[in-house]
Length: 62
Image 1 (cartoon, rainbow, N blue to C red):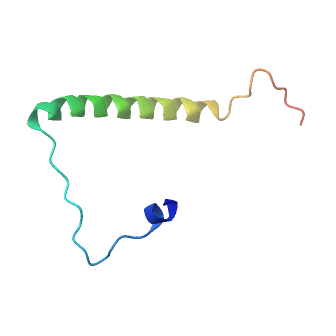
Image 2: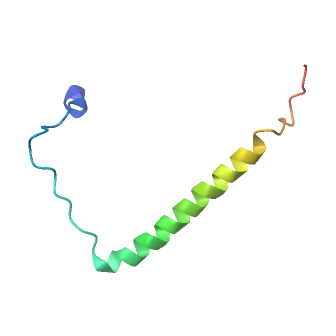
Image 3: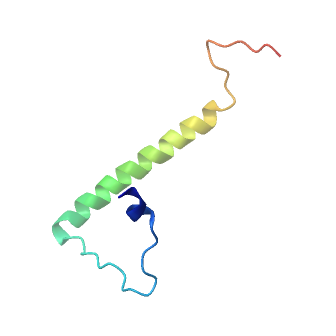
């Protein structure tokens, strides 16, 4: 069964049809997406700033 999920789909078949997002949920989804993107960007910025910082428990032996 695991092999079936890895197989490439039929290149000549019609693509799957997706349903549209209901109007009622559209605004809520936009707000959630904004929050997720903000969190992801904030976490990336913190990680990028911590790259040059030495771990508090480790000493530089060089």
